[in-house]
Length: 421
Image 1 (cartoon, rainbow, N blue to C red):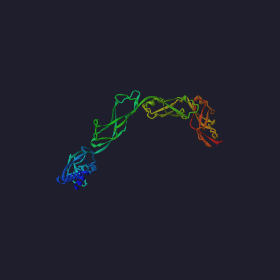
Image 2 (image 1 turned 90 degrees about the vertical axis):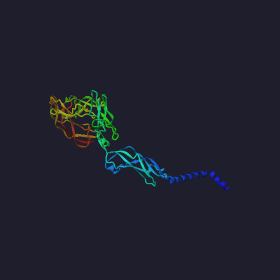
Image 3 (image 1 turned 120 degrees about the vertical axis):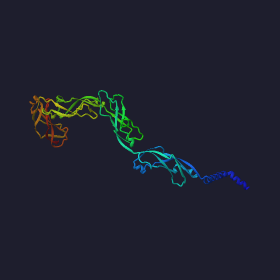
Image 4 (image 1 turned 45 degrees about the horizontal axis):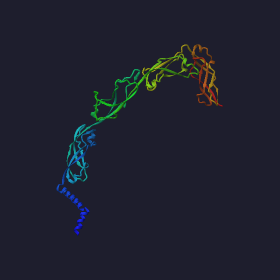
């Protein structure tokens, strides 16, 4: 009866199977430890360490440019239960730098060591035994980016300004000294294939490297700060426009259009952006103060200044404006016909100055010679003045109404008394 209970226990509860597995494992351990304790194993893909902070590398200012492999296989020997559970994390694989003496290519021996961690095993070999590396000094140099635009032409009536403008105009290239020494020029190159351009264009072109013989330099070891550059081709349309002047301090109702003058260069050729030059009708060179024109002072010089983005293609930098004062004279008068005009509301204005002396009048001889002081008016215009109470000295405009091409020269002033009402 007791034997059946035991038999049923093993058969019905699956214990027999568990005991069998446990006995098998114990047997395997005993065989591994005592019958065949050592085993040879290859650990694959162990990373190769190249110590770039080593004094050998740092002192010689070297950089690693290339390495033919980054991992290797390491053969180990040891007790089976240890080596069967090893991985690349249990081994340090280092390239020996003792033979490095400068820039160049080296076959560096690989040295494998066990990492501390309580696992005892023996390293028996490394495959491959060396790693091929290339060292060189990495330098940075600046180069000017030169444009090379073939067949750049413009149609008749247009002007190409200056040389093509390149942005960036300068780049930094970093790479091995030996590779940098090959580079003599940095350029952007294109061929416009004889197609004239009639407006400003910007081309984006690849930056290319050339040697001293103008042959293309190609190197994966050279790193460019920029890969492309923008090339601006500035093309303007030509147009001939008249030069003009304007006047200041012109008396009211003065026949300014009757004042004769000549400009030494009445017209000028300019070049500018097409959309702007088409709308340009003239170029104003400056202003003439009419109170400064006299028979002895009738010539004025002006610099020719063009709007931004326009070019003076004739290079006419200045002109002379000469007034025709033939037959004109100047004569002095006293003026007692002084008036305050445009007086602000709420104020009373009275004249302290009763007469202006030595007022110089210019005009045709037959007109000026018949003038009297009654023909001349001195106006004090209060419309553009800040009015304050008290005695104030104010500028005076001298006019000769109804006498045609006659005007006063010089500056005059009078004192008025201003009171609030």
